[in-house]
Image 1 (tube, one colour):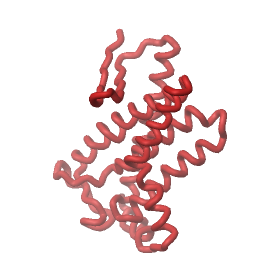
Image 2 (spheres, rainbow, N blue to C red):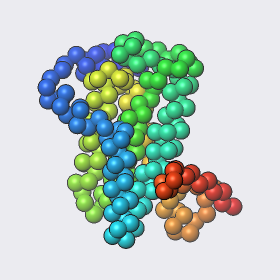
Image 3 (cartoon, rainbow, N blue to C red):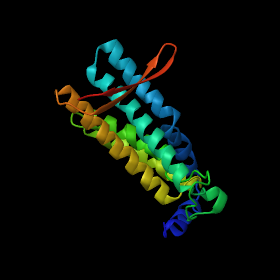
Image 4 (cartoon, helix red, strand yellow):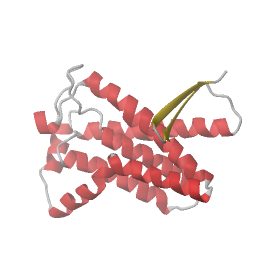
Length: 202
């Protein structure tokens, strides 16, 4: 956090047309576009009877709920750090004051979905991790460039997304292999809304 003022300021103070255009193109992948991508995997899995695509969509939704949803929201409220466009880069946390800079939810979402896609398809297609993580990195960069987040907000968001995805993937694979697990959180989209199923295994 001590370097946020210097690093964030340097990034934001070097605007250019290319960065503006790239930022506008990539930033939605930290929010709505990521769900469109997951919906595409779900449709592919359903219509083509592709279990890997369905698994990617399911794991992506779980990561979105647990990482970019629950974990990020809790930490934002706890740390209460002001955004750079309000207080400048490098503002200190002021706990429980309803500020929402730390960590970056867009970056957590982008890296969570990127990790799920990379883990499911990276072994067969070596270019997939490069595209997935490259897109997620551009989301994080844009959040700093647009003064919505400090660099450490983005680093924390990336870590939350990545490690939440790894946790979800490990638990999902252990269930499929017959190993017992304690808790399972399964979000799904229904015709009349959104359903979250919680299961306890013994």
